[in-house]
Image (cartoon, rainbow, N blue to C red; front, side):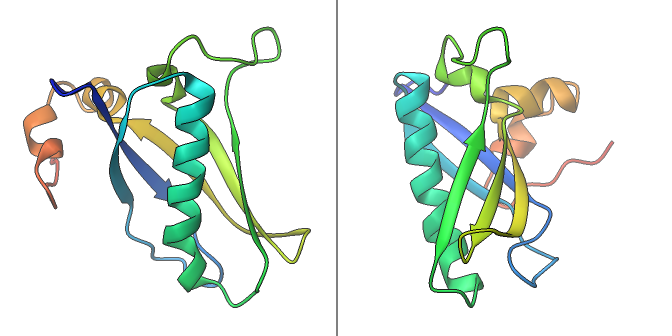
Length: 124
């Protein structure tokens, strides 16, 4: 979490519609209850994906938590959540994984500064 109370997320897509080479979506949102943050992320993902699909109908679903505890304790627990894009009511138009920058930091062994820069890349 940043000093101003905002969480930075990176959404990595396997595809959106017929486009398989989709740039990740990076965004910062105000911290709050996990459900509210997930709803805001879904809205932002919808806005990002909408111009990339032909269908008039687009739904975004995010899955987080576990069977034992379906509600994460904090919004930071959304790290690793997965989701799908559905068009026409039933056809999958892509899938995505949500990562927090804290989660990415753990994943790449502490290279947070490089990830935090717009367009930054990490080499391992």
